[in-house]
Length: 238
Image (cartoon, rainbow, N blue to C red; front, side, top):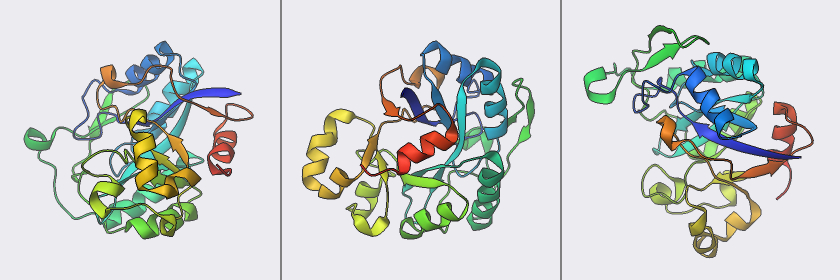
């Protein structure tokens, strides 16, 4: 079956995310756009995943718990997990690799933690947009230890992408997928980096504001609309 997706969405927990990116606003906008499945991928944290999953369940939207990890090289990777328990365990590990820098809300933005009803439960005080000590080369195996999968985000962008920061993407990273922001750049990138021909190419919105969430456009083929089936589809050969 075709599942229309957006696997790269931020909530108000991300300091650069709008405070209106609440659990119910996110899932209802996804439903309005006729999406079947989304992933919440805040910067270096999964603290709002449970709330968004709960809000999604109430309206019949599949929500995958995830994170946008910032590696030691300041490469952004989308990390997806099979359940909230493993996502939160990975989050604990990532927190242990972040520098102890306190967020300055007036500079970077608030980092809001919500419940499923959009109530603000508190604030994350550790700045979440810093680089972890996890290298891009080690990320796939580390995320796999938590049952997850990860792949490079917005590879066509000039900042925080694996190509812009490391100059290349090749088989040494062991990715199954890669995300591109502008699908029109794909043919050029494949000529420059042939390894992309071996990967599943995804396109996420990287939405930090509700109006940036993506309309029903990109889909994956899976047997059913469950996280398990979606993972099987993402892990299958290109």
